[in-house]
Length: 216
Image (cartoon, rainbow, N blue to C red; front, side):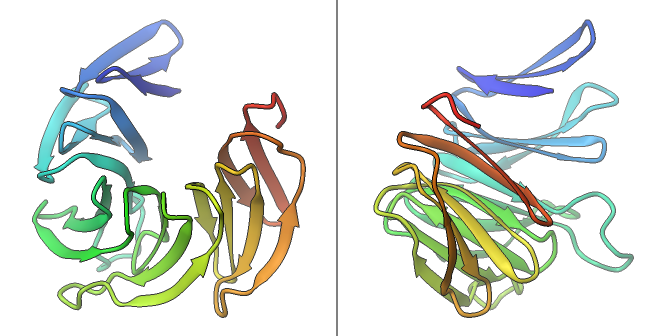
């Protein structure tokens, strides 16, 4: 279990508690095998070794990082691993998880990037405080060509997740919507939240959402 706030990230396993510190609020957490990646408004992402309980790398993004997504540990042999970061100014910066060097950057949103999802290889989905959900092709050196742009919500996008055919987005307007990943057309809207929505997660035909109206 992991939690963040006030510049700290805590990893809890039974009675063990290891605290890793940023110099600002932690905005994102991603676990990839034995590694934990944390992002922060202090302008860095930090890569932690969960076995040795230490920081392995500090990636200087250069501005407040609002969200992150990274490739899993078990990518196919010969496939590059990436760390994608979203910033408060709406930029996306992508780093190689082999060299930790920047390989791609582009303007994604008019305003902060509020959430993102990656298939771990070439596809990145971003949500912004501008209410848009966008799909990008993460090909090194090609500027992050935009494959799809959806006006998804009338409020900041709180959470996005995707698979091979669909995208699910949740907004701060309380709406949860399902979109075609190919065309961007709306497929379904899920009712149930009347207030601030936090996270959406799905697997197969099951969809779970949470919100501040005490409903899951």
